[in-house]
Length: 459
Ligand SMILES: Cc1cc2nc3c(=O)[nH]c(=O)nc-3n(C[C@H](O)[C@H](O)[C@H](O)COP(=O)(O)OP(=O)(O)OC[C@H]3O[C@@H](n4cnc5c(N)ncnc54)[C@H](O)[C@@H]3O)c2cc1C
Image (cartoon, rainbow, N blue to C red):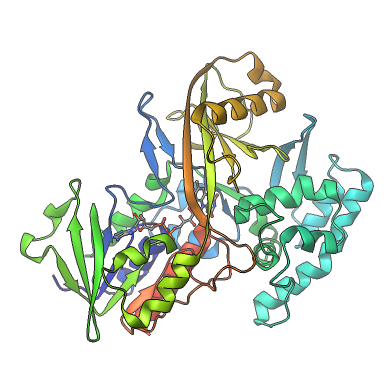
């Protein structure tokens, strides 16, 4: 089989690299180890109800420019619903419900105006948001001019940065901490400030919708992975699932060998050409924790890269799905700041009648990931009853727990430097959310890295 580009990994990074490459005329083969596409953003059928359940709720932001371009390209833009402006309902530890709404003003005025109007906060807490005007401006400037002037220093945590810029404890609890946890998947006292400054620069910089939240309206693999597969195959590419790749280096050539798993769709490829591919370019779009396993023997030029990938720490996310005997929420999602489960999503209101569960999410979940399912369900149920009085009389019919121990990589100060798209081997390129895009481990980082790798194939 003649291919120009082999992409290893069928998550957001691999599929966006492949889609961009076929668009540009390349013959592409995607090799995905699992039977289902999507990687860390996928869904599976619940054993009892048959409902498709995400491996964890994913949100997108209006500033995910490469992601929206990718979704438009593959014809899947309608599979997410974007708010016109950032608007979030929060229920605090005392059970008080409030709503932050950012009006359609130029950024960052819309954030300032929204916070000044937010009745969850005392006046002095609202005013403290003004302390972020200069750091935000610096972060924006660094983004647009590539200036080396930093909005935050590398060794500083998010918490220290916010305190240094005058953010009150209450404003941090209600706004910045939930935002940082959601964006970085790490508690503000652990994550380094520069990645958060970068997220804020993208959210509160270009236009007021950049900070708005978008929710998938379909289970994750249907939202983007299957449309991407169709797009790639329509343009003559091949997407092979259930096939784990190994790489061998022979001189300048990068040989991709596939081990076929039981659930493969190998019939798509002529048997004689099944196992070994040599292509002009090979893009690894596997996560940091899977890079070393691509090689039986680590090639010397890649030794440093693989060592850094191995040393990168991971952070977990825990999701508890609850099925009740009746609908409980009147909006698709609500923030629960200060609690173990920081957000609750009503899947009925996001994906429609095919779903009937609530998803409660705990980001930066190192402290609870080792608890039993019973304990996690009890925490989620208790916190829901505290926040949403209607749930106290509702009957809990079913519950499931999804642990993603390696949901994202750590952004703590002192972690190894993230790699670039190009490696010391000319034909071997990298994609994946952990590539140095400047962004935390997000869908947008994955898609940007995919587009960067596709561009490097042409260059
Ligand atoms: C529970 C959870 C919630 C999240 N919430 C959000 C959110 O709200 N917003 C957001 O922006 N991001 C969120 N993220 C992060 C987001 O999911 C990831 O950043 C993104 O999906 C990473 O995509 P990727 O393509 O880089 O990697 P992956 O999705 O991990 O894809 C890599 C693929 O490579 C495959 N692979 C590995 N080794 C091999 C091999 N040898 N051969 C073939 N294939 C191989 C894997 O099976 C996998 O499918 C969340 C993540 C999790 C887990």
